[in-house]
Image (cartoon, rainbow, N blue to C red; front, side, top):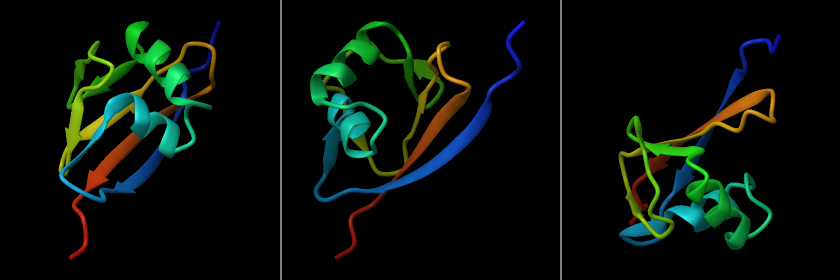
Length: 86
């Protein structure tokens, strides 16, 4: 029986208006590449603000929370997206 996963928290500061979901996974180190990020999204492992998101290039904006849950990992990941600093 799998133990409940622990949660790891990340903050990502935008450089611009938005970041595409698959690239956010790459830029935070959760995916080795944008392509791997696309696979994670297509497999339904990523949610935005509590809703599973299947659009690989979904535009994530400041204030949104992205969760990555992979049953093969013992740690679930949460990313808080912060606004760009002027």
